[in-house]
Length: 371
Image 1: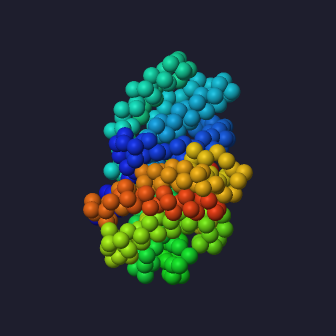
Image 2: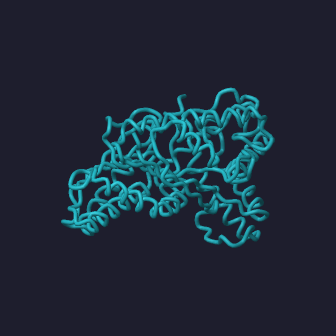
Image 3: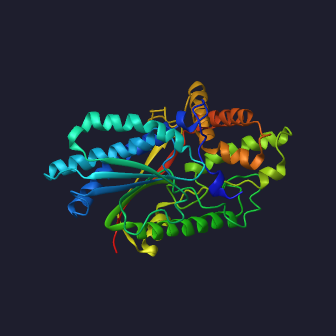
């Protein structure tokens, strides 16, 4: 089945749903606010939306409250910028994009509260705000030519359009790992270059001249693709699947044919792709790290105690399950015991964090349409 039809977060409101396990994404969104503020001020200085309609697209928006948190943050900043420049706030058009399996119904149910809060807090200080859904892959065209002022995407661009080709020899792994053959790393890097270049090219058609993009996505801190930044997380999940193979709960052939459509680039790969594509100028690139467990606010210790490791392992496993369960059940079938798999994953994570508190490495970039 095509990836575009099966890649989505776990729907609903159950304990394992994305709606209940998106604190990590919220943390990342909040860290991007200073960049949003600076970028929107830059757009305002070019007078391309003042007194008109400010058109926003949130790509890979997901289905939790975080989606409307992004819209709220952008609207707050735009209103403040207009106040500073003695301008009347514009109208707002907010386009929420994700793949077809996204739980848009959950987002729609949040809209009455969103509109009521906007009216309560802003009153006459804000023009009409129209929110709409635009389902489809951001590796295809989504909007008319020169129709957007700001594109935002958080924790989405690291997802590829497809699993790279020619990696059948990545046996017992589900991602480029320390034991993967060299061609696996090359195939993943190539697929990222193709996809990210295509993403930039398509958005350059949809964004007005002087408009901007703010993208936050998983990356890695050094060029070595086997570094621990995110590689070790997926090695723990692969080990959990291997445990199930040994217990006869999963077929080895099914594990060998499963690879994640995900890539965490290094900074140089991102810079090179932007430069080579040529439609955008890179205004800012920053990096930051967050703990695997978003509820873990300890950034001093480099490892956890056994008790803390178990707690943080459990929270991390719930977050990863909310992101990967649809992919896993699509590939392995409904016969896979997802609860048992993530219990094993939780145990491996706890053991890992007790020895080394590995963190997600994130890349945040702001781009301006230059042509």
